[in-house]
Image (cartoon, rainbow, N blue to C red):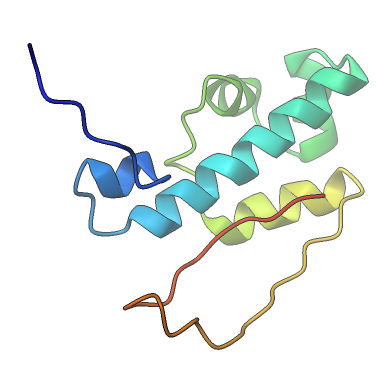
Length: 106
């Protein structure tokens, strides 16, 4: 029987990636973009035209391959999709040793 370890809530941190918060944020931003595109029923070609991307780049996004997209670029794609992006900076709670980056959506 193998040991089971409870997730921290960030798979990238659990796997030891040094930029885990950034990766999780980009993954969530990408997930939101894909959800909007699907909800609108856009083909990849239509999405590419709307987002001013090449169709293969839309395909990468739709498959969760966001490594070619910076956080800033994902923000801009969300803006094109009529989404506001708010950045809030606040003091971390004393209960956590380090600050973190997270995506919060209603």
